[in-house]
Image 1 (cartoon, rainbow, N blue to C red):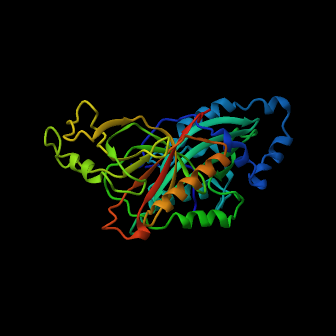
Image 2: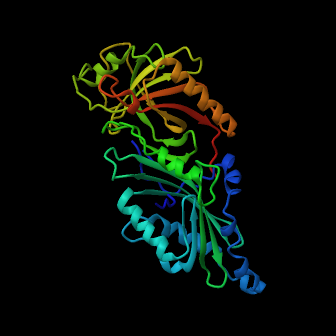
Image 3: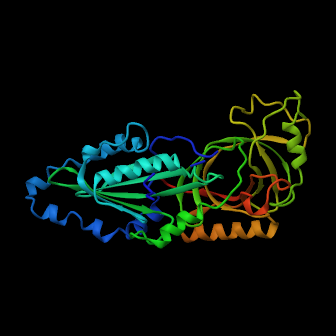
Length: 372
């Protein structure tokens, strides 16, 4: 099975973002496959300086911006821009012809319905172009249709003789060993096949920018919540009040469609807790009915960049707090700057869902997250 480059509410379409994620970029590129890294030596050594300088790398960068978004649609990529003997490598797949590469792209289209998002394309060497991408796939052959997420870099080398791409190496952010054949890479695929039960309800829109071994970095669009005071992150105090608002206990007796997840938010001092229900995206503060209870409030969450740790099981308070602590430590280790406080997201009705397939998430908003 080949995994190619390529989030949530769940994914949504964005134009290229120029994402480079400085804390991760250089560490990730160190694990480039040696065979791919050296693939151009024989091509370049025979070229005179005049011949070598004739490669228009900028034109190829522009080409990839236009061509790669078609990787999994009916148009497909332009095979004429690749050498017939192009070398492709990712952690669990290798091909040495353009025909083999295209065959596996077609196989992925049939098995996974991939959603490919291109973040940036830029020159990173005299004959090297690097792309950053996100790819989300649903494995449609399994009854629960698990969602597989991969983010990473593609290092593409140019043959000066043909001015076409002669090698393509994919590096995944979620593993350390990106050499072919990577047992770590295979384990990463298998791990994502586990069962999570996510209700078929609207949820806040986000784009997955990066997926590491332990967490995702997401870009959330703004969303509106109805909220009231809670008691603890895993608690349900106040839920009946916010649920009553969407069930018609409001100034217009208007029933509002149910969404997911239910959030509980711990603010800066970690003592104030709010329980929140997300309202449908077509609603804004001006179009919503007023709450009947003074303890309820409507608020727009401005969105932004959040790190998210996903887990299953019954979310006891000590478990949720431990997940928050683990996520915060991982972010600091990776050079990111987590804000104070956190949010806990529950996607399932605990009375109707088996613990081992429940989907829970801890979110921590990030500050000073600069995109190149």
